[in-house]
Each structure stands twice: as structure tokens, then as C-alpha cells.
Amino acid sequence: MTASKKEIRKEMIAAFAQIDKEKHGEISRQLQERLFQSGLWQNAETIAVYLSMGDEWDTRKIVEQAFLDGKKVAVPKTIPDTKELIFYELTSPTQTVQGNFGLEEPDVAITKPVDKDAIELLIVPGLAFTQNGYRVGFGGGYYDRYLTDFIHPTASLVYTNQFIDTFPIEPFDIPVNYLITEKGIIG
Image (spheres, rainbow, N blue to C red):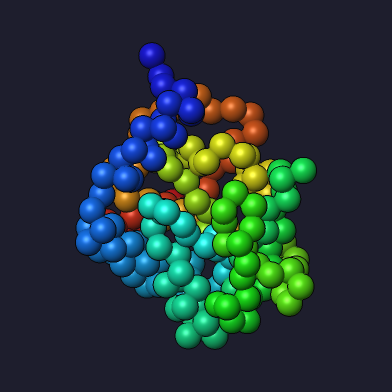
């Protein structure tokens, strides 16, 4: 029997917690390097990326590298009432505040929204993935809603241990286009 998304989410969160800090840092670096070397990265002027927390792969280095490479950086603000995301442009890594769910989010008082069509690469979080890009996220459906009419490439940082054969795919689940792994890019 196929595990439910809730069961998979619980198992993956526990698995992430078991990775020691040094190994976690090494995996994050490998995933970042694969991303930075990709045409996806090199061809995008505006990158949208979540700000990692807890045991997620580090995305703060992605923000730093984007600034170094002269790219625009957009980060999401969650709107719990409607379960929507609005991305805001950061011009400095200090333009964030503690937001919903304990997430670090853009300070909307000093940042401006970014038009969805202006985002040329969107980095999407996830806990578990199928080889064809379907993902189990954290359970709010925020990214699936955002991706319904998103026209540019999407990618996720995926350590090969995060791959699963299958899970119940629902009509609203939207796969990411590219999976950036420590071994290469799938997509």
C-alpha cells in the first residue's frame, strides 16, 4: 500500500533530523554548486527562492550568490487566509522579518512585490520527490496554487535519499520541471 502524504512528510522530517550538521552542510554545498553551474541559473536574471529554515537544504547561499551574480532575488510571503504566496524583491539579505509559521519572510514595508511573469527561475521546497518532479511539501498547498499559471522553469534541491517511488498524486499537484541533485539535474 502506498503511504499517504502525511505519513511521507512525517518520515522525511524525521530522516532530515538524523543528518548530522557536517553532512547536511556538505549536501547543501553540492546541491548549490549543481544549481550555480546550470544553464537554469546562468540564464535567469530574476530568481525566486524560499528562505530555508530548520533542516531544509541551505538556500541563503543561493540568495548570496544571486546578489554576487547581479541577479534579482524574490522571496515569498505567505498569506494564510487564502493560502497564497506573494514574492517580494530583496535588495539586501537584511530586508526580512519573522513571518507566518516561524518563516523568515520579506519585510513588505521596505520591499516591493515581483510580478509572477518576471520570475525566471523558481526554487520550490519539498520533502520527498518522484523522479518525474511530483513532490510532497509541508502540507499547505501554497506552491501548488502559485504554480498553476507559472510560465518559467521551476526547480527543487533534492538529495537522492528524498526520492520515493510514488505517493497519492492529486489533481492540484503540480510537478517541478527540474530536480537538482548532488549527482546531476533531472528534467
